[in-house]
Length: 362
Ligand SMILES: CC(=O)SCCNC(=O)CCNC(=O)[C@H](O)C(C)(C)COP(=O)(O)OP(=O)(O)OC[C@H]1O[C@@H](n2cnc3c(N)ncnc32)[C@H](O)[C@@H]1OP(=O)(O)O
Ligand SMILES: CC(=O)C(=O)O
Ligand SMILES: [Mg+2]
Image 1 (cartoon, rainbow, N blue to C red):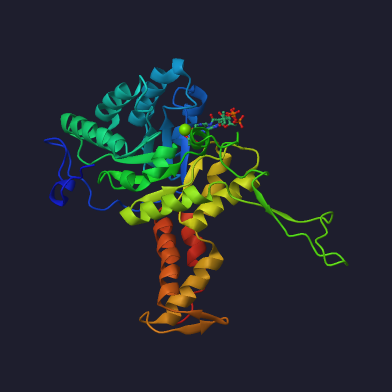
Image 2 (tube, rainbow, N blue to C red):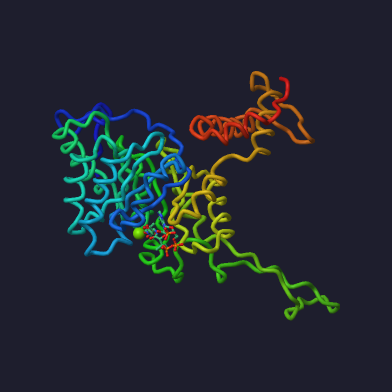
């Protein structure tokens, strides 16, 4: 396939469109909270949620009935025009590129609320060609509407081909902001045999070896521990590497078992530890979980600051609590310290918590 030359990569794709960004800002986005703008009861709650969640996302795609597609689009325009989002980002998920609704989604949203929309999430992205299509049409619409800063693109990885092409998707446009996992569509597309929306599966496990009996042979009747494995580990790890390579941000996705807040927290934490910066929230109960999990813990920040203080100019090696720390572990600690600083800028409670941690003398 052909690639743009380096000199053309950051050129606007339409005359009068805003200059593409050279770096995607690391804005806190621990929870991307989904709402249905055609659901009046749900939509009425959105203005009061500003400031309580990092991202509010008006969903137009799956989970919106076909009969409500126009109402959802118009509802999002109304909410966006009437709401001051302050520090909270406004995103949308448009309909799939092969659907009858997507063109109207784009041509309606960009002129009406393009200045307020931070990111457009594109579902079922298969390859760079899908990003190129959205990239060009956004530039044309931005130019026509006089939008002053580029609307960014976020791709959902939810087809086997999308996963296979993840690197070219991440590098397809300077608008690329990040990727989310789409475990439901991805499972269906791959013909995986789980019917769950994200999360683990009791059948996907490893089992402890059988203990040896008195005769030295494995006792196959003995009770053995089983360890449930993470169905999504491979895909998340692949997403994290592709995003880090291209300077954009990976996210977990939906956890459909709304009532099982414990397993939700576990799945979110796995993603956080592997390198994701946030996740989706489908129900208000999941916002607090995401905010907690995707903010470094007090213990991690206390430890990270001790290492930073002890490492001085960053060279050499020191022992802290019996463990070796050096240049590489200092970098690991700085990931956490810098994330905490970014989050503290927008979350006063978290700032107070981090400020209260006693920082050791250098
Ligand atoms: C695979 C994928 O594509 S995932 C992404 C697509 N799916 C979605 O976007 C789903 C979004 N979430 C929802 O539609 C709903 O939360 C559902 C259908 C899962 C559950 O809805 P309900 O059965 O109404 O939940 P519940 O009764 O617990 O709601 C409690 C309150 O929270 C409100 N609420 C529920 N979800 C949300 C939400 N996402 N945002 C704002 N408010 C919400 C309800 O309106 C209700 O308000 P009330 O107390 O004034 O009556
Ligand atoms: C997130 C999503 O769209 C999916 O899991 O299919
Ligand atoms: Mg999907």
